[in-house]
Image 1 (tube, rainbow, N blue to C red):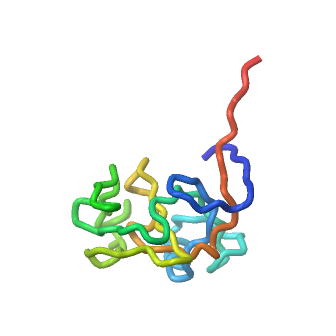
Image 2: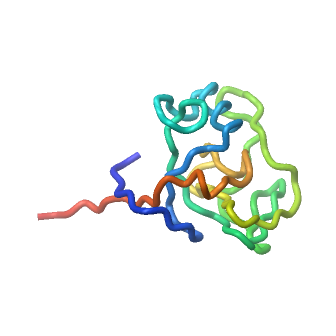
Image 3: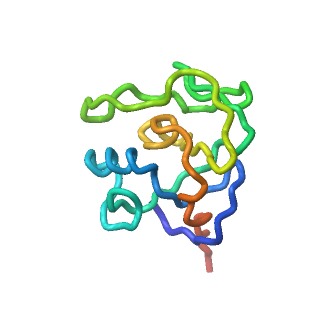
Length: 140
């Protein structure tokens, strides 16, 4: 939520990006009401804003306690087993993944309720529409 400024896509760890979900994840997210329709992404969804967690060459480990990047546990990255309505959530198989060229992992550390790579794995960088940043309120 909020007002953001969009600019050309820059893929770097920590960058906030606007991206389309992978087609199967977009269809699931639309069906379950996680994302809005009316967009040009897969399943007619709108792009979502997510921070980039890992880029090509990084190692991501999916564990029961959460995601690890290069061995470091990412705060608040433990995947939930079920959503708010009790439906089972997908997730990548536990193990280590080297992020391939042309993909990124996106994860919001603000909420376990964020539908992100802890549930659908890597996203093609071709799905990134822009880099976004929140606007700053100015006082007068």
